[in-house]
Image 1 (cartoon, helix red, strand yellow):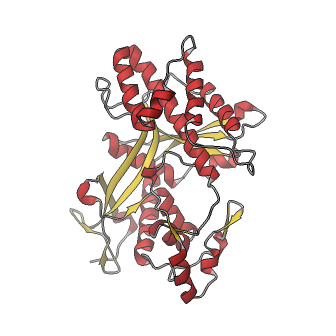
Image 2 (spheres, rainbow, N blue to C red):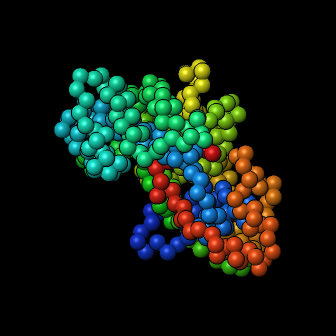
Image 3 (tube, rainbow, N blue to C red):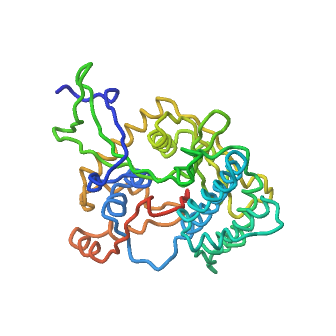
Length: 376
């Protein structure tokens, strides 16, 4: 077989089935973790280990709660359109079905309790507060920024800046149980192949070993029609929105992967996305607290995603469950203004490392287990 060339590499995607559940899974967080530091990636996302800790992951908790608000806003937007296009009865049935899917039946009954006499947008703000109040989030005395009060203010500002005229994607407007563009989990089987002749392809091999199939997983926050274009919408909560923050999404592999997943999900190419940033707490200029970053993905973006994804999967395959053999990227020992929790492991000799692994806690990460996603 001739040497592999990157421009001959092809990844094919299909929805996973029950027979595929034994395949390794990779999502954007896991893929990124390896490139931050292989030791971190293998320990945390391959072996699902973490150091014992009693501290709360407040950025994740806050992001999770606010992402539920974002889902509610899209659900109410879809309800408004269906009520006018099909019937109020169908719209209500859709809202109740997907409300229970997103929040659970008991919680949804609280969130959706009637609010008489309110303008629809004002009623939505009341429901948003109910979402936060029932989310399980509570204030931490050591963090005066990520408070429920600040989250409510941010949620209201988000609703005030929301464009209700853009339709949420729905597979079948006449079926209340149909797929909708709100919190879409995806689980795709990826088959790497390399062309060896103009008309043939073979499973990709690396150093003489076949690269196995793997699963690419994640969750899309939203799919909406922006005019004639179907757009992947991705919500982010952050402590500060700057020009640099906005520009950082221009070539983000996370967004490219979401466009790939959306394309498989709807069965047609999706090349447009929009990152919607919400700052908590809101800045003094409230208008600046919500920023939208429109993005387009071209073929070269997908080609680069392919190279990045396969480079990372090869790394995980090489060091599978062998954190003591992985390179240590010491430039990443301090991230997000705090030290990496695995520094004690990395600073120990091999015998002590084995003991530390035994004392670690098991905590399996999967984007399919969570609603929220933050950039911190």
